[in-house]
Length: 300
Length: 311
Ligand SMILES: Cc1cc2nc3c(=O)[nH]c(=O)nc-3n(C[C@H](O)[C@H](O)[C@H](O)COP(=O)(O)OP(=O)(O)OC[C@H]3O[C@@H](n4cnc5c(N)ncnc54)[C@H](O)[C@@H]3O)c2cc1C
Ligand SMILES: Cc1cc2nc3c(=O)[nH]c(=O)nc-3n(C[C@H](O)[C@H](O)[C@H](O)COP(=O)(O)O)c2cc1C
Ligand code: FES
Image (cartoon, rainbow over all chains, first blue to last red; front, side, top):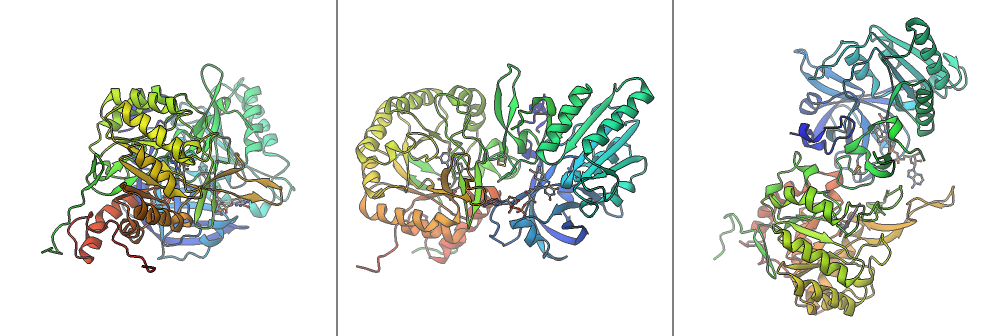
């Protein structure tokens, strides 16, 4: 239904036309790192449509505090024994109103979920996909890595990359969440770093990115065919966009703009996006993103 | 004799406007409807009110544009829209082909601006009513016409005389007497008044000593404001002879029924669309049962039937 309105693959006019609104049963809800939890819920209709980089809106059923849903990236799509996508996982950092309550939700309880939402990452020919994550921003990358490595198919064709690297940074070792999940993806090169040096490289994720780009250049003579995708705190995404620009590699960012509906009807989630004529316009991150070409973003 | 088990007649009449049922979706809380086509069956709605349009495009206010408060949502979107030309070319063709009644919301910067917006839209056809947003708290002069009865009357009359489409006036609760403003709208010839838009409010991050909204202040909506809107409907229904559409914090069928008995002939669902995107469908499905409970066979029979404890 929506395809004829998505001429620009990074600019979905409205994407909610494939989404559904459901009550979803919680399968499990477990702690995976310091202040970080993973919730799995059953929603076959959503799981079968979900593409890497898309998100869902979530609200605890019959609770009016918080009143408004919260967007969470889809971390994993799990199939049933017949290989049919059935469950979705979200990984969340315990932070405020929703997430401090979500940790108390037990298996068997229900969540109100609507999605899949947003444009997600589109399949594009890529020799080396470099995924750069900061903090909880690693969540969209498990499915993306699997897709580009040819390990999973999300109902669409995706050209395989020769190499996929994850550069993942957090403040300290305890906050690095889902590392085992990434390390269990065959062929994925995982490079970790921490601000305090407690694990991996001691320093910023942009240092790691530069090293990966340098190594790639040494091995291939140039960075042609490299694509950087990035999700994390805004200053980090801005820095990654700047590195990508100076190394002349394509870069896409997945923004975590606050949202109130996730489906394009409230105009909360706007971000400044450059137009063809050089001026900027506010675009709704939920329907026209959350993935944008980094060169189009006017950073605040 | 009313047969309580029969399917009730949900149709309502507001002045010259006929609606198939009294559950509408409110301006600014349903995008341009197209965003929702996969989630709700648009054809079942009592009416669709797309986001308010203005003559020129407006980028709207800087983020943060919304912030959640206890049982409510503050917003300072600032009428972000692409202007009437883009509306006519991009959104109207889709909206006017929907079977649900289309009520286009407009906001002008002067009485003449309202009239020219109305005339342009009337020329297009396919529009069932106009809703004059004279109550937006998030733009300069947004509430001028909604806080002065004479100005309200003037702008409603101007639009009413300029086209044949039914005219609704959407009023602000941020006035001393909403009855006086509603009376102005009725004198000007409004087919109905919509009660209410958002309540002016704010939220502060005291550690940063900074307001949270980009526009400092904004409009409060959601369940937190329902008692205020309900009171406005009750007061206007008793004092002014004009049909009413109730709006404010409606989130379940009890809320709908309270507004109907208070005097609203129809209601609009706003903020609840954000956190329960299929709410309008649920309410339309549940309404007949509530009418059966009251032993009535039409919506009209319950409108304004609340009594006063003081009489
Ligand atoms: C597309 C997208 C994907 C996302 N994916 C993920 C994900 O995979 N995992 C994840 O953990 N998060 C993700 N987020 C962020 C997520 O939506 C929530 O913002 C986050 O979970 C916090 O929600 P909360 O209700 O717990 O916190 P909230 O209560 O909303 O608070 C969020 C922050 O705002 C501050 N705050 C809240 N209210 C006020 C106030 N009144 N004054 C001052 N400060 C205030 C809080 O201190 C806190 O730091 C994503 C966001 C987007 C847009
Ligand atoms: C984010 C947001 C944007 C809104 N935009 C408009 C608008 O463009 N025009 C308008 O007339 N009302 C607008 N409103 C007001 C609603 O239509 C409604 O009158 C108000 O929110 C009260 O109803 P509720 O509590 O059910 O949301 C907006 C409300 C919200 C929350
Ligand atoms: S969150 Fe409502 S429009 Fe994007």
